[in-house]
Image (cartoon, rainbow, N blue to C red; front, top):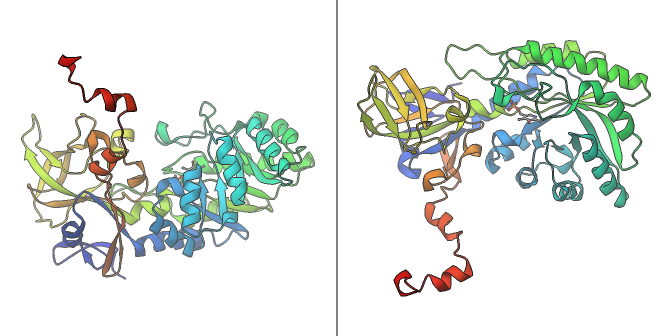
Length: 430
Ligand SMILES: *Cc1c(COP(=O)(O)O)cnc(C)c1O
């Protein structure tokens, strides 16, 4: 099978669609996703876990909440890990059964908890004791028991970027593992909760299985302690975090290696395991298509100014993240350049002093591995349009998220009523 992102006759294609055709139809910048790539990663992750007897797969919606993407993943048997009522709305709209939804997140509001109870979601991942108390009271008032697990912070350094590390004791997530037994015991007495296990998620973009294995081993000991204390533990949520190769030379753990480690560590647990992959599923399935606006001389290297910016793809500005940059019609020539967007921030820089395909004004190029934490983090900073999204399937493509224009955003703004009156009076006349 041909690669989903491949050069054919000198032109970069997504499946059977040449990227210039998408640029002509939709304009740039735009995200472009491959159906085949999305399905392939969803199936590879599931296949890697073949040795795990009882499991539930929940795509982390925050990685890519696009309705078309979620609909494809629902068809692959994925539920969703959601962190807001907004993400719940997207997952339900994509046809994911409410029972397949897991509600994570350190700051769920009472309104969101009520909405999730209304919808009948499958599991609440409690981040602190008080949240469990509030949820139990809300469920009991409805004559229900909310299915829940307690998120534990295992105090493991995931060895990833500090801003996407979540399992060290100084992070805001979960309850300290040392306190977990006592908190679990108190929550287990509440009638409004069907407390059934433990959740962890130690971070994202993990390049090494070691920290995950260390965290899982700690959770295994906790499960044994909780059972010894008389609790029925039937579910353990192992979170997400599997990393992706953003650089061509990077080597990341395969889903098969991850699955083998999970099967080995959890062999005696006798629980249903839940998995919440995000980046691994969507990251490689998308690119950000952009046009080179100018090539500008710089103090050391020239600046390639592209029409995509930090508001469209925030990861480089947020985490110093690397996204491979390749020309849509590579000539074979190379250049050393800085790559930057039009936003008025020095942080709006995608790369410095990088060896890239030689490009000139008017050329198209892509940032690769942009299907996860790409469009979902986009903003309208500098009154730029909200970046659109396109889905490719074979030789077909379609806009699956509109470009929200500055005019549409302006239409959502209003003067205050008193300004509307006073604005009619010129200042000098007042
Ligand atoms: C972000 C997140 C995930 C997904 O992480 P990836 O690194 O994208 O796999 C899973 N679970 C929780 C609780 C998260 O916050």
